[in-house]
Image (cartoon, rainbow over all chains, first blue to last red; front, side):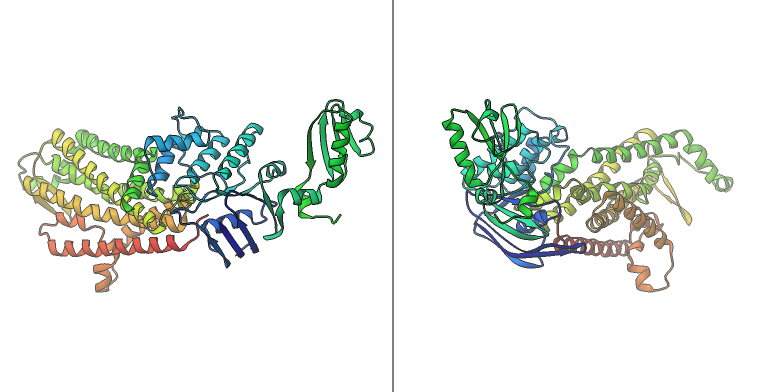
Length: 283
Length: 277
């Protein structure tokens, strides 16, 4: 759907992007992970045509009038207008339908209430993010790019936005998103790009990338800390929760043993930091 | 594609509280002029015409609607263009500040058409403001002060019969509208270059003051004296010369029209060329 090859961009302050290549497929959710200033936003802006790269090429296999919809940095909204009027303004300028039914469906799709008639300056960050996504989805783009969509959201907001992103991918939209929240990217993204100092330093299936570096897991379950089998792995334990150290191959054996010993495991979460992915260690 | 963009720009413009504050400010200035004239006008006029009244007999009321219209017309020197420039430049600087320009550029919108729509919206707003100023002043000035002959001091005292004064005032408003469009067009282009509201307002005020200063300056070069833009922005006042040189005013307004197109082209070119975000 989208193929960007060897993109480079240099600002007065230095090189923001260095030979970065990325490709997005229809219905696939891709994540872009990197520190602040790693080049994520510059890459997004180039993909959307907001800025011109010094080198490299972006090709998009779409015949849509608007191939890419995006929310980059904070959603830019007319804060003195309400959500409906914001949608109407952005629809009208590109000749998209502006009838009440279509616009109300757009609001419903992203889970925004229809009864809010006040200006969007009164909206929470989560609601602004949702409206930003609704605007990005106007004119049915094939690709959706979301820059830090989870920032400023509470856990409920993060969970419901993750659900929405998955629903959009089910509509065969190719999605690219960036986030600092490792857990959310792990849950949502099919594949992952790791960017550092403007370079894509690692890429692949999210599960493979996480598995290759994860060594710590948090397992929760009733009285799980009393299991004899995991005692040798435990690095920290609390009531009904243990943190263990093992590699990704051992974790399935550990979980199987816990189940065999009739412990009810309620969750098993890999603990991995951005630093681990940026500075991978060979196992 | 241009029409929806234009409709949207006008919709946004009239939904901004800033626009209504600007309209209120213009009307308030007009009202203050009328109230001041009502209470002190006769006194000031007597003071100004003291010497002449010793030699001539003035028939009728010189403090009339036509004089008030002429006084309000003098808003075209500074306060009205400044207010119009602030509102017009906000059409672009607010979009930069709120990040909405980025959102606009992420839609299926042509950059050139978008900025042209802003220039046209500003032009329409300017014309509407001049019309509003003209109509409200006509209604209030004639309603309160009635009609009468117009006395204007432009180096020398010129007297115009009431009917002729009315025509000259109408033409002056029309000519002044072109000057105002020039200033608002400049303010949008300044906004494109400077991006920030405060910087653009300061640059606009500076441009306005500079234009007024250069208008009085003598350059000694025929072409500069005739066609340098500051020399063209006061054509409206030439309708109060005793002998009106219509063809010269038309030529000046046409040249100012060319300046307007040039400023629009520069603004559009730079906007299209630069990255957003």
